Image (tube, rainbow, N blue to C red):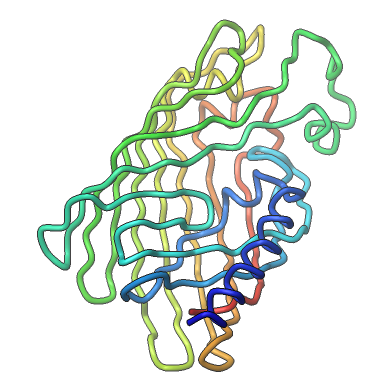
Length: 269
């Protein structure tokens, strides 16, 4: 037990160090991967290489190192790549109700420069950078066999207002189905639908001349894992997102769709 905790602490420290230099936008796009149920701490901790847009709506992809941290404690508390939660009510093995904490990435002006070579007034003080949004709210989940689904209802806040607008709320629905599951290999299809409020769209993508409205993003992905042995697992994922019209129409958005690819290795415990 002591050796496991020492390994866990060392790999977690390395992952968090990588996270400090990672593109937060890329970390936000990692698809969900389910972990086996168990008592005490269990899950995966490792590092991956991810290719994704520099910001949501950008046309230029980058490949960087990202932390892969998907940890549960007694199937009650969890940190899952880019969100954390507490399942405070579990009336059965299939259902849960919980609290969730997450984030939605903002962007910096240098992110725009790679997507817009000739954009006017990119350095204008009227074009404010957007802080990441901190999200908090409730979520509920259902799991039956190889099918898993969750819905999260969240409110958002940020350090700064933009054009006198604060981030609003959002509803996120996630679903996945595992087609292949054996001792060595798993393959799952995942889908995510995000409904963003008018205030959130305006906060992230609004300009002095563009306000936007509520909209919906849709994502699909394939996720696979391969167990090298009892302690190490290889994880790979590929997916694509279609941005809602109110985001795609923003002058800050260069592409109305985006793709991601991920390959990494993690310690399993």
